[in-house]
Length: 461
Ligand code: ARG
Image (cartoon, rainbow, N blue to C red; front, side, top):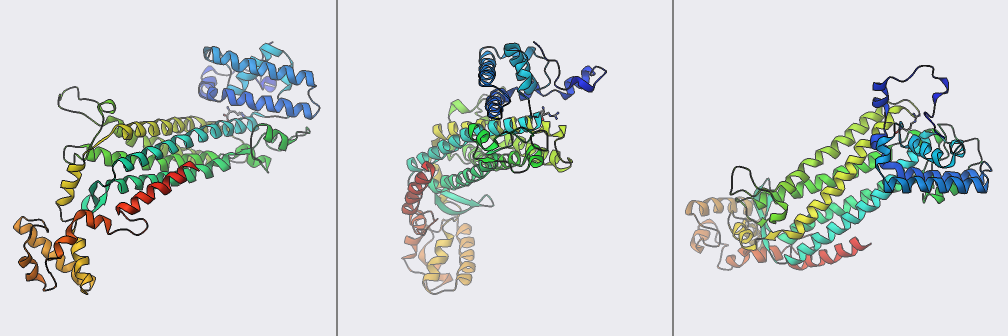
């Protein structure tokens, strides 16, 4: 038994071959084959409960559907050979090969509109779970590296100018915080994905006694859509995912940018492992951080997909329009890109070699302890604004002399203020400067240690 089209009834002329290929989604929505079948299995059960299928018919459809997935697993090339318009048509045709005319009754009360919306949600729920696992794993890697790097002081920057000394671990945990927020956004997206549209029909609901609550439960959904028109045309959950994924990738891109800089000869704070770098075809000395450059660049894809789908959705009249078929390729690509970038960054972090000496040396140059000097004067009751301006002048003097603040003799300081005494040198120590920031959120050794513990607890949840 074979079915050509799902909707041939009112058509008298053949489709133009170019239109056919323009219109087809099978080449990409084949990605939904398994979830499409899952949806159909549950729908067959719902039809049985509604009295449309006998028990025997339901079992036969279910068996046929499972065989379709099995065939596909064994031979994905079967889909390549098919001329079906989309994955739903393909599955129905393949089912008809197995169970004959019974396959044609599976679509009773169902439309591809509620079907595709259901498929996409089932697909995304699976991916969201997987991506959540990857983020948690990357978070642990960040914590591991932060633990391994305990006590390493580096220059902290603003405007890419040396600003104040910080712990390298503290710097790493800043990215862990971003990823934690990403987990929160992912969870929000997941909640909005976790709604079952099946049973909404083409747009107005179903005339069959489909127990939508039971159907949703059967598919593992936590909620049922409340309005059939919204249900078949809502793709907000995809936007939510793309916003989450875009933000996550912006974070991964920033981390990549930092590491690309820190890996450069000019910084040399760290070194990427050979296994995640590549050479130049011309310059034999080069080792390029391609892995991270690609993570940085691939962010653009997901951001593009977000804008693209927003644009697709903004103008479509209620309810389903074929425009909605354009939701898939971008989403699939964003899912893959997100998974790949998370994996790539994790690999880089697991194998990176840190250069604590270089970080410390760099933190010693550039007057990163100037703020400490101002705080020293403030402790001696000088108003901060005044201290700030005075230290500015002291820094100019020190750099004229080619000295660091630690190296400049006390008499030079005393030319600026009688408040200076020999104890000023103790406050200039970088480690002490770091450890003075011991309030919540600061960079002191003890605070960072606690922060790692708190993070581990949150990651496990
Ligand atoms: N391939 C279509 C899509 O992805 C399936 C839904 C088709 N529905 C329709 N009324 N033509 O959106």
